[in-house]
Image (cartoon, rainbow, N blue to C red; front, side, top):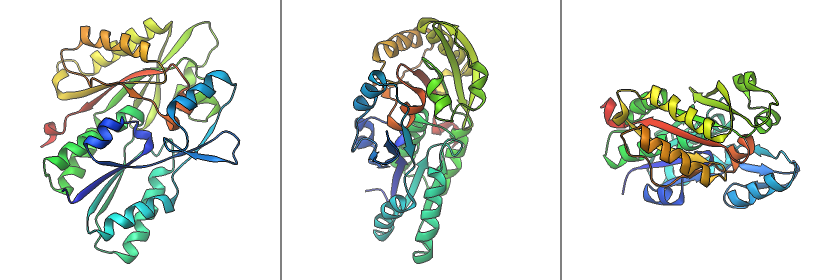
Length: 293
């Protein structure tokens, strides 16, 4: 059994299959519909329940980050077993999860000064964060040294992208996460804003009419990004309650890029889905760790 335990906050949106395969420990975010009662992501509320409510009611729920104590309790049990920790968090641009984990680490070190805890700001979110976590898991399996894993992860982060479209910018705007993508705001009929995530921030790309053109656009952006280096990346598709649309994107991917893609779709979970809304779809590219050995 590895002496390095891999953790992530729940915004990584990995499937149970991948979580179990790589023995990834999750720290859940919280969601509230009334700012009084909070539910743990994937424990007290499921992805399907969230999207059912978003589609049936005109609501904009709020999220709350994992507490310092949430991280402290997770860290403590692992450190007490004399194991090292790598903890990957949602981009610090979007959330205080990274800072909460860092604070919990500092508290642990007061009592366990020799503990090895590495807290990583993924500068990413959803499936892109998840694929970064998977690359770290592969490095742990390959028995790389902790310091080498951390060095390579920084390079992986810098080289990762997710290109996606949203059905509406309302959720990003209401949730206060719209950032530079505000440039795409508008009310034209059936317009789909296309956005990309780079170095932790959302950037506007373009506005296109209809989902099919939006899907074509994100694949075009991906092709330009990985041109002449397609085999250097791992790929995945993430969607927010829009599997049919995700299938269309996968078909476009298969026609455009000569490289494998994760067979299963990643579902955009509760934490991120609140801010994207239903019917969001995206494709992410994360460099393979072997490039940086």
